[in-house]
Structures are given as C-alpha cells and as structure tokens.
Image (cartoon, rainbow, N blue to C red; front, side, top):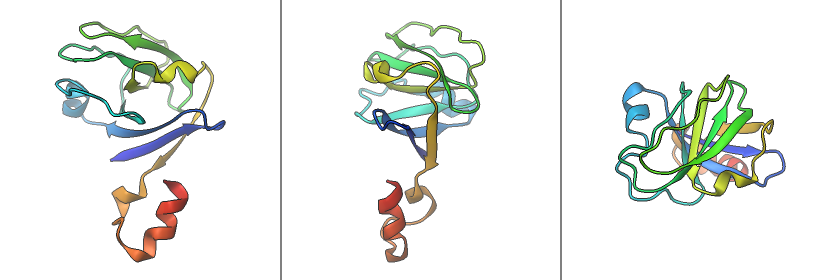
Length: 132
C-alpha cells in the first residue's frame, strides 16, 4: 500500500510504501539499487533503523504517532540510525530530501486511491486527480 505524505506548505511531498510487517520492515531498502525521487518507505511500527546491505545513503525522518517530525538525519550504508525519543515510525527517503523538513512539522497523509480502486475505472478519475 502506498501513502501520499506532505506537509502544509507543500515544500515536501513523498509517495511512501507502507512497511507494516516484520518481514517488510526487515528488508526495507536492502538490496535495492536506487530510491526514485519523490518516493520512500514508511516503517511502522519502528523506532530505529540500520543501513546494512544498502547501496546508497538515505534520509531518515523520525515521526511520532501523529506524523509530527521529531528528528531527521542522513545515514550512509552500513550504519545504525540514532535513537529518537518518542519515534513510532520512520520515513526513509533519498539522501538530501529531508533537508527542507524541520522538527515539529506535521505531515498530512492520504492513502493512494489507486490502492483502493482501479486507476482506469472511469467512475474514479475525478477522485484520483484531486488526491494524487
């Protein structure tokens, strides 16, 4: 399932894959060769990360259960991310992307309608355009 995450000013927007099982969280971005711009993964529940077996640096954005930014950092391959008190989920994006975020910012999150209904269904075209 994908989620569209953005903050009120519109400066930051990402389409994040929701990693909500142990197996998905464990694998995360390991063994991928690239993370396309504007995309990421949301690890939930999660309070810590590692970048073992990763081929590129990432930005980790630590969020509370209300999608408020508690902290962020760039993590290079083969490292462990920092511990951020109160973190309930972590958004991983391409390195450098989270520079525009500040502690205290809150994300608005929407589940992508393409996950719930067919994109090609003519009954849903207006809804898809308004959200995506």
